[in-house]
Amino acid sequence: MSIENYDYIVVGAGSAGCVIASRLSEDPNIRVCLLEAGKKDSNVLIHAPAGVAAMLPTRINNWAFETVPQKGLNGRRGYQPRGKSLGGSSSLNAMMYARGHRWDYDHWSELGNPGWSYDEILPYFIRAEHNEVIQDEYHGKNGPLNVTNLQCPSPLNQIFIQASEENGIPFNPDVNGAEQFGVMTTQVTQKNGERCSVAKAYLTPNLDRPNLTVITRALTHKVLFDKDLSHASDNGTLPKAIGIEFSKKGQTRQIFAHKEVILSAGAFGSPHILKLSGIGPSKELQQHNIPQVHDLPGVGENLQDHIDLVHVYRARSDGSTFGYSLNCSVSMAKAIPQWQLKRQGRVTSNFAEGIGFVKSEPELEVPDLELVFVVGMVDDHNRKLRLGHGFSSHITVLRPKSRGKVTLASNSPNDSLLIDPNFFADEKDLHLMVKGWHLQRNILEAKAFDRYRGKPLYPVNANDPEAVIEDIRNRADTQYHPVGTCKMGPDSDPLAVVDHQLRVKGTEGLRVVDASIMPTLIGGNTNAPTVMIAEKAAELIRTNTLKHRI
Image 1: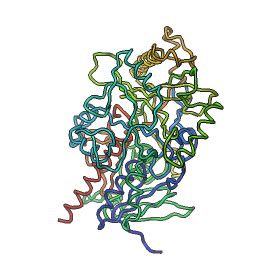
Image 2: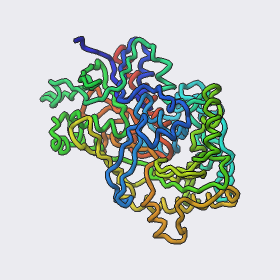
Image 3: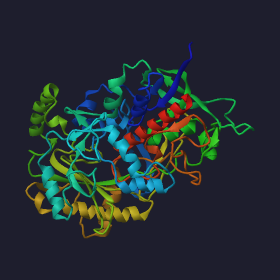
């Protein structure tokens, strides 16, 4: 059997992997192989924006992970949906375009990561983006990732904005521009009424490149290292990544990389693969009989995720919301052919139509909470279906203090990691969530909503502090933004896994490029920042390649 050789192997065709594979393969002299454990992104539920409601609570294009029992959530297991197809979670998410705050990236730089300040990473956001609506120095016009306004947002979004203004929160026409504070109807990663996943933006237009190979349904087992170097010889040479072992259709295969192996499998997948490859905490590797290549204690540590609580109200009428009713069934029966023929109508909704970044205290300089307004009843990630109509709002702690980790369940690539976000381990997160709980309730109870608001799905006495905390512990869960498990940092940081060029410490020819490298969780949604990270990494890699050619 012939040996398959490439210049670069990219593991994971998600939001980062699609960018890396596309950008590197722009050079016809570079051979790139992209591996994805999931299927092709051909399912109509991916491309029809409203399909998110069917995928999120199920295993359709979704790993649908669970956490270990969370003490801070009264012993409940949290839910962790992650994309499993070309496009990764960008083929599963609610398509909201949000970048985070300037402060987040300046903080990364202050932690000892040169090149990652806001002014230095803004060009990569701009390079990635094609914004159909906003044209200024903060936005791109010719990038692959299409960003636009919702086609037919619910009029309830204006009510949400009015209710926020009643509570001292201003309308902000662009939370990704000069100022983040405020609320707006969200911009979305859509194009012509379809989801514009990162696969659709970067990968699909370039699948005919002869130097780009994409292999789906390929479960990565481990990184292969030069056997002569796998235990750091006396001359100080580092173990060099030379390929990947994976399985497809029950057959184990190996492919080889002349230049680099790049892990873009996400905050769960990338540390999992590193550990299975012998890169990680030595004690954990020994426990699972994995030969150690390099002792790297930070692999799997530093897990951070946005803890989130949803307030849900029934609606007095069903015209402006989605729900389970005869009227909505008739409406959607008409909307489906409208979308099929013209890519217009209600099927273009992402449901999570409103967004806001707010402050728990007026004197704060940087928003510490996020609002997401949903034109439907969202109960337990849409896993509990309710008859009738309503509306919901998420409140999210943007920069949690709690730190969790992911650890091996076994040495088999077929077994999921043990995921422990450690929600509310730091009491400061709970105190901030209590403030957010009250702020969000005040918005939904504001005069602007009086004509539309029915009864709350989970009534709680707002004047009873213990009841509020119990409600939070009983119902709070992720807002789907796990990061940090392959932390970027200087050598002085004992938990740093990659350096500021995203090279895995103690190795050669191996990088991690995805949300797992974030040293701290940014104050916003993580899809756009992950694309930015990959754009920057692609330039770092290409610059290095050119130096070697010269």
